Image (tube, rainbow, N blue to C red; front, top):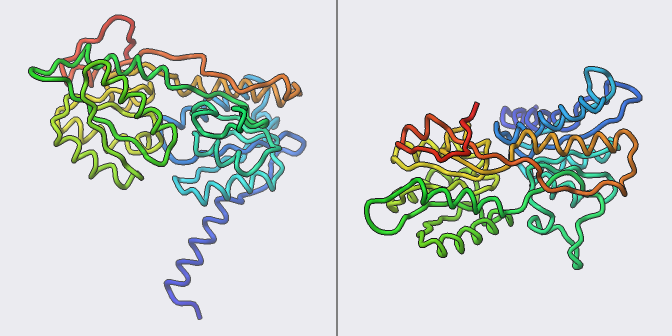
Length: 326
């Protein structure tokens, strides 16, 4: 007879299995795609909305019975993410939509045959998925981003934050296990030095570390906080913004979606449009365009945005060209 603990463990395993396997395609004859989100996040979730909207505009939707979508979210668990990708492969999906970089990397590690359409991901080089000749995987498509745009976002801080004495001190968290996070940190470290800004940085390894590390960082007399573009910051942003607001420290970022969640301002990609751009390319593939005609692309739409409530909280007057969030 099973113990209570054994029953609980069995139910948990069954629930995870059901969440990964799910049901078969509902619309017979329609193409089936797998969409993998690495974790739950309101900002990154906009990419999925954009991706599916582009497919719908291209003639593919579950509502019209012209598409089957297998959607799974790994909730930040890497083994589950791997299991999700392998399930998609077993279902012989037409393509894998991967968001953000963790999903992209995991998909590429598990298949070289099924097309992978990335979004909210850095360039192949920044993800360390290129070969010895610097070539991206042959099955990688979708839309990526480099780090040049974060210079514009970071350079906004000294224009808007003027400490009374001494050099401007900007706080930053970065995830040591995410290559693009480390690359962004190193880029910002060099940029801060060239601008006479003191960058006060602390590493974090997971979302569980953020509250404690952010609290320690805020005791380092920082004048502003820069939200580094990485998965840990995205998924822990409410923790970061709450701590910074309580400490009277304005938050800046390079991600437009984080402005809606409380950051003062950003110059960066529109996450919905990022997903839409990737979805447009996927729709071309589903319509029969040969893969040799498709290649991964750079983000096309970036915007300058600010949060009026956050700006007012810190008495910040935004320069021309920055649009208030809707």
